[in-house]
Image 1 (tube, rainbow, N blue to C red):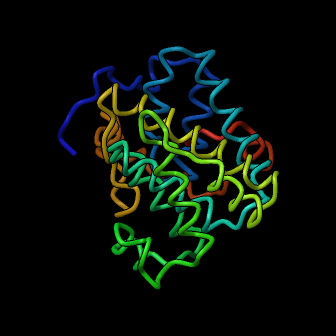
Image 2: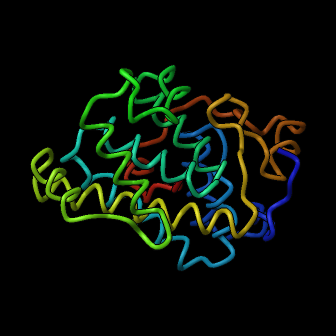
Image 3: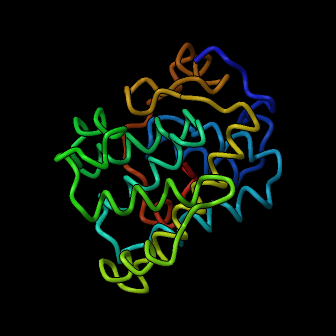
Length: 220
């Protein structure tokens, strides 16, 4: 939690109005501005494009069971070594009401009774896709099609591919665990200063309907 990112997160005072609004929404939703988002703010157009893409992907990814999708994504982040992605993804699983205890046994997913056959198949696919070069086989995809259908397999493939991109970008930029799953999300540089001034959490109101329809700020 002491490592600095290779590109410093952009503080609100150096951003425009739209970026500050998106920071505010992210902070209300997650407790703090996700560090990848604050780093992406240096390139405003790509930040907005990424936020819109994340929102649309989240809304569209409803074919697979949540546990199947999230476990595959989490495995991908672990395999690449993105501690920020693992931290944020674990928080999302907790908020979705998924069983967190079994994550302690995820290295043994192939034999552990904590995971269903469908979950094991999805994790194995994530492992095969994330290996370089990938080791996906025709037989593996045929098995996944039988389990999830063509739409489900495409959704799974897309989610794993997207997490590969997130994890590799975060790792390259030195973005590491931020404390979301522990409830201590506070590493962005200006956060401690905000708390000292009493700014953090000053407003106890919920986001408005307009705010909730803004692009999601929290890409993994």
